[in-house]
Length: 285
Image 1 (cartoon, one colour):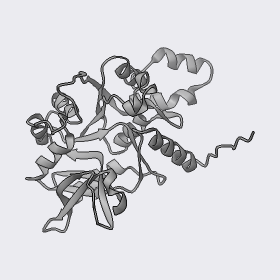
Image 2 (cartoon, one colour):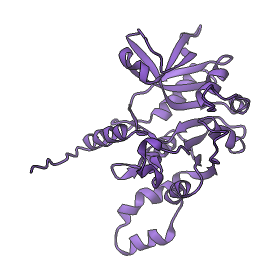
Image 3 (cartoon, one colour):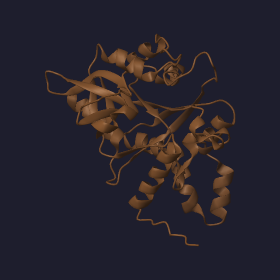
């Protein structure tokens, strides 16, 4: 199993700071959002990871963080700061990284492109497709990606998609995964609704951009036509594949935070701080 992590977005909701810092490199406590996704991949037994970046400085930031810097490590060692550098050093022993640059284009863009650009990397292996700008926070030491892979194996389905559960009243904010039930009693994807209005269910499964697919699904990304807005959307390719294959819907155990928005990033930082027992001191004037 391999992983493709998409971080090539412009991050316009973080502008003007988004011009200088890739949104996936913005911090949750002392490490970038992207590092949490990588750690979850490693916990799931994935050691070959392709990170699809934007061109230019945004991509260089990602490559620099996930590339071994021996000079910097030596500098820290000489000052007795090995514990500060250790989280970075361990990355390079736990996973092999491939960096793929996604061209910036006004004609061909969207969340499906990281898969087509990574076709050679994926080869004939199953692969996880992950958005690198959100966080699944677990406080029990578990891994939702490991759970996703195990659930797919247990259900005997060729693919699986992670889902957060939200109140029906909040469903209009998300892409809704509508389930159908297999003869074996497993919930699999029946359809996908993009931010529906008037949803009347008590709860809803929502897409959080973590999907496990076989290599044969790449063809559905490669033949994909653009949506009405011109975007090549990963969800369209996944839904197309799921019309002929069982895609298990697996609810996550962790808490999902959309770190692609300033408010979501703030919520993730607050939650991560609480999980570590940290408190923010009050300031009075």
